[in-house]
Length: 410
Ligand code: QZP
Image (tube, rainbow, N blue to C red; front, side, top):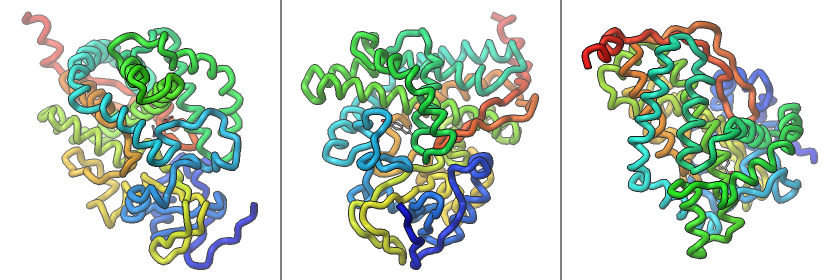
């Protein structure tokens, strides 16, 4: 398909899936915002929005900007998808309304209350180990170790081979991009993991009391079929690991770079929650997703024809100076409501309360033990078509003297 650039908005050759963009998207995002309310990405043959007003407007209008053709570059209705489409993410109402209702129930603040203590206990254990080690990799030893413990535990997954979740997440997020080398490499890894994922979404794999078992209870009452329940469990496997691992990695990097913010958190641990949202705003683990127009629509002064992809750059909205005061400044006391790091509207992140509980517990435990962070090497970025994350973050955690002395007094 060749598409000539429209004449009612600016076109650009910026490629949001290039190495240059993925390594440091923020200068490119500023350029994209500068192009106008809507622009045309020639390399993607898709329209795009990167300002807060338009990103939010698109996300709030799912009748026109549909998810049913997928949230990635390729149109799932025209191209064979590599996996069965998600029945929560890659659908519109009314199908979405049913599945979302089930997840909202299972992931409500009330249903999550009992997790708080478990997360706090795991966070304390890990934080103790980390300050003992003193020097470690905050991506593998902290973010991955913690999330691969608490999240699959909450889901009810068996303890073995959990690192497969990182592989599966990486594949899925790469698969949302165009058929570049990252996409192809992901497809080459997909086959070896397919069986493991299928087995771990099955009723028999899931222990009682977890999110997984609760989804299968919805199959027992006939709200969804048995196969649909397994697909909803798969959504947890896909969406609940790499995302929070990414945010935690960025959080530690931010605190290592901004010791004043770490001091503030130590003095007032109730800031842990807003600190996490500020990280999700400023570092935006998910750069953006696509929508597909269901009919010709006018956005600003641009007419977008029916059945075309529009790229919605969450990370652009999250650094928009028209929406945020000093958007590039990390400030854990900032009022972050309205950030689009979790998306917005009917598809806004269903697991965001779990993510907040997990990260709040770990940041709080670390704040009690670590006086300050020191970078012990250069952080590296993991290049992925859709998920921004650090690959490694060598740090030294300086132990708080008061905390070190404390056990001797008991
Ligand atoms: C949501 C699914 C975690 C999100 C950023 C994206 C996401 C990915 C997959 C699914 C849902 O498979 O349902």
